Length: 415
Image (cartoon, rainbow, N blue to C red; front, side, top):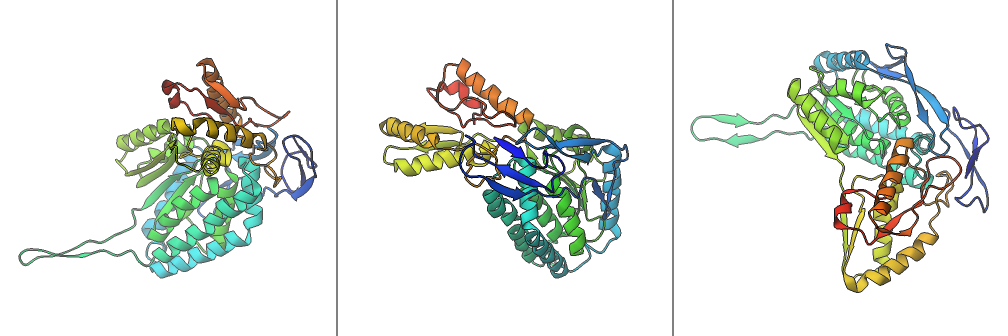
């Protein structure tokens, strides 16, 4: 399904992309050079204290892209110390909001100037579609930065009228050092969804990207340095949740944590906060959203919405409409049209613009999805389309639709 001229490691070469059936014309894409693989602490790239690294994997092939520094508690301590110094004694929180906004606008410009390379990095690391990633993921980064750059000088308090001879007012201040833990399904978007408002408020931060998708976060740190963000304001620790993530969540000198990911880990984050310094916690956790279609719906539109709601980003979306409820009068027409549409759905190399669906992000997610599919089959659900892995290598799965699903099975997420 996908063969590389450069052998799949290190980037910098060309990729030969074919569709899921191996047919049709062939396109070539320049693969990105992997320039940043070390931790970013206090304005510079450094090795992990332990010297350990881990491998980030190309989900198209299962091959190694690069070895990445594996941060641990000691590295988190260094990053938090740098962030604390930048917040307590540095110029960032004391700078006028309009000045912070100017630096953020410069960072947005740099992201847009490097958009093609960032797009290829995100596609390579996460298995995301090239055209969609350029427009949606990387495109959103610049607009998010610009939005919050505009908000940086509009953080106001209120004056309150009190009874008696009293004066009262509210004052909004940056919380301090923020721990920001990023998921693997939208690495670039979620980086700036968390980082941009923290920057606008005047916070310093320690960012931990998902171990599956660390490449764009490290690149963004490099661009932040170029944009003039002071040292220590943005620190990036690559590593694993039970070590680096846990160290952030339980750190006594981190003032708040923002986490996007699973409900299970969200509970651990809250527990770590309670057991340490009772830091505020912002959680965005997994979901299982229903799509409800009534008899008077336009069938073609309903099918389009269901496909997009389920299979956008290969189903790796926390708000995916992975349960579809149909009124009886439209059921058979919807089912027939959906089955027809899925016959033309192409699974393959995400660098090929004709492909609709790339690989799952890593082997663990690939095996998890296949496990869910197996569970549905064992419970007696009918496979309307898909249901199997595809391709000779990589983490590709046919888009799978079940019918005749028991209500008790809907706690399981099928993709």
